[in-house]
Length: 345
Length: 217
Image (cartoon, rainbow over all chains, first blue to last red; front, side):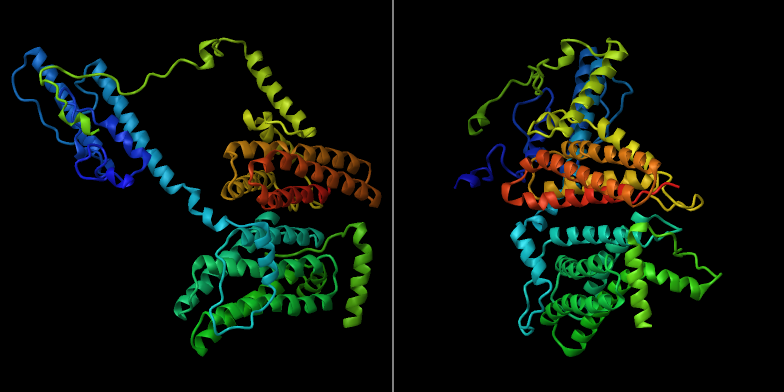
């Protein structure tokens, strides 16, 4: 067959190659000196650094030629695999060798770079259509009924990443309208740190627990599941940062937060065997998810500041929120909130 | 290659030569060397390029000039001026409640890098620096909005000024998003445009939010 001829033994150029285009650069390293034009196959695979051996060999041959020309007796020193450096080299030879060294180094560096800094590793996780993203967002609020059969989780990172950034934006909005001052840190840094820390940290923790409890889930799937679970958080916070009813928040917390938690829990339960394991895994996830929503609401909410001030008094903790003058526009909202608080208290 | 197996050259004839292909001297420096021209010419040429791109942003048409000769001077100038104007936005001068200079700088550049990576991962054909260039230049309407906001705030900070600022910032935010979409969306496969536009929308939304909530001392 066509592709096989290249790897047939005895083909002059095909043997031992892994097929990447960069390997053809080995030709340039292979200056065989004053000898034959036959390509030496064992030097084609230069991942072992044999280009240095080539250099040493080439250098040695050139030096031998020089010595012959000058009529010097004595064997040339064999420095196997070692590059002699600029000492003792004449002008043009030195330049050629230096040029070779530079090209070899550059080629190896670019090969290493393209191997490790390749974002194509992440490309499969971003292969989505807008319809799919919308469908998954809606699905994340619907708990599945069938828990005896492992539910399919899409290992996709675009939706979760966008949801985390949206949560950051909503959090910023909440912090600004409640005029939170962060003393040790910046507003933006806190928001990004909180959201990304939650997403990555809790995902890793639950993945670790899933490993202990023998659940069938991979890291990317866990990241994806928890990321889509943040959709409920986004909705809740978006609504309650603008409409400051306390009771409304609790309704949303239980309803919307509860739904998205139920979905994540159901998916995990369908992938775990054993009652104790299911209980541990799902209890932890449910607790962390609901508590995070509670934390986000209360940490950056303006009504709580008044309570904190009256409770703590002169002893202010280092991370503190200070009530400030609220812009004129939200006076009406403040009045409504005060009335609601009076009603609940 | 099988035909070369029986080629042999006598040992005593040295075989030498260049394997590298000589590069033709097509570089424009061959025509005129930019090293000898007066400094004013160099600076004016760069300034004209930057100015032309500003004009392209303010009147976004589908032209490839912004993409073809990308440069990062414009985004740097805009970013620095925006960050400087957002200083001093805290009610208490002892603790800085507004965004620090470094914060704004990092948000803009980190956000632009994330959007670029995202559009590349979604299968975009645009290069890294071209995308950074476009996103940076499209911050221009928001910088103009910041200027207007500061001027309005000099007059007073009541409800009327808030409404004016809101309208101006929202309009400029829309302009920025539309301008960058006009340049960037073409490089995406057609059914994924929405996936690329959303992060751009978020990015400019965050910047607009920082501008709108800026309150001077």
